[in-house]
Length: 114
Image 1 (cartoon, rainbow, N blue to C red):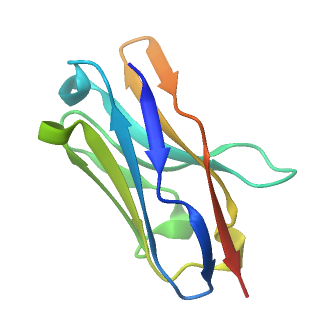
Image 2: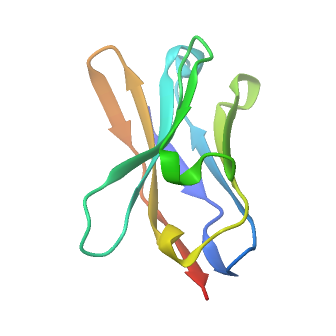
């Protein structure tokens, strides 16, 4: 599986961005998909995950602001980010998992100015 993330950029606090991650390979619908982020000097953290069975989870800091979704027909997972805050600034990474296999896409930078 190859992952290609896009949609990052610079936005003012309170603004919105939508990240997209397109996946190659024909097992996308069976993959668990997730977005992680890594801010400077911090560890990479799970932001949101959507599992092949439909279960969704979010890190507490983004609940109510971010929405993860997937379009299996397009092999794409999205992260809609609203009410962005400066502490959301990070490189965001798309992740796919299938049993004991895991793939990462190149990150996309999200910068939120105050």
